[in-house]
Length: 395
Image 1: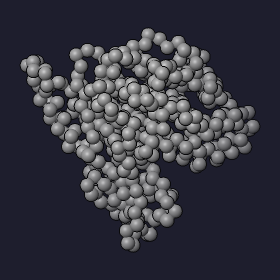
Image 2 (image 1 turned 90 degrees about the horizontal axis):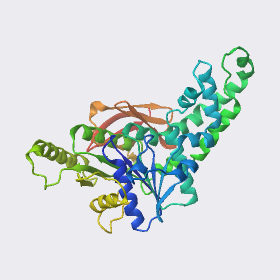
Image 3 (image 1 turned 90 degrees about the vertical axis):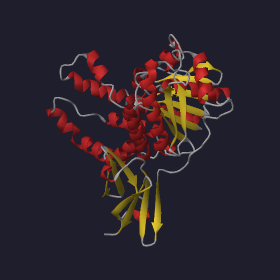
């Protein structure tokens, strides 16, 4: 199975390009699912569907044609299915502060619930073999990064915090509940967390396997959008995902010669040159600004014809280079990380337990070290051709 993530700044056209890709894949014979991971769902709107009663009632994918379905996660339904004990406890805590029942139920939809629910579906469909390709229409960049980092975060929590927290609360709960205005979470709360984690088992490895998962970054030929696309490229790389395509959407066509667009054309031309230079050798595709709103299957198919050649396979694996690797170099070991656009001042690193922690800006990446390197410490680092090389030695 292939998983394609479409990510980028809000409003750049991710949903339209993800939907068009789904149509191209289904035309080539793939059993395809396009799933919205954005809480502000617009996937059904992209296909110009007035309502999806079947989907809203059952939470099941909605068929567009015999090989293509779309899925917008219904968080209220997912809470009833998978988050019941967690949500019930959060609602109970909020009620003690005087918040009304309706407000409490709304506030109990915690950040990440929707993304985790979508990830559980991806894992479920992978295990069932229901689809050949899943196209994920992701939320804007920051939420997308949270989405892909969740498996690592949860794995760390379940290994380091969960057993201690569950055991401690089990011991103090009878006494604490007598004096606390809010009862501590019951063991069913922790059982619910454990069940959710089991549903996600293996998804982290799937997301970081370039033969299965690829990221397509959607951008516009605008300076501010480009800067966020660059940051997203770095962050996805740090999270172990492979970006195999840059899609530049809404490029002014050559046929537009009106003086009104003169400055737009000049600025777009400059940014397009930057994009080609910055992301090389990652392929860059340009999609023109259409004369009409892209809405409905017919116009999405028009986008697909521009985006892909007639026989071009969007599911083809074109890049498999790992974002980081471990190397033994004579007397020392090295960790190699792909860090495009990074400069020395942007990168920080330190050792924590058996992990190497790399920090770019405000984002940290925990890289579990192999047994042979677990006792080593980072000695020095250097940047060579967008690759960070960290020397590891005994101290």
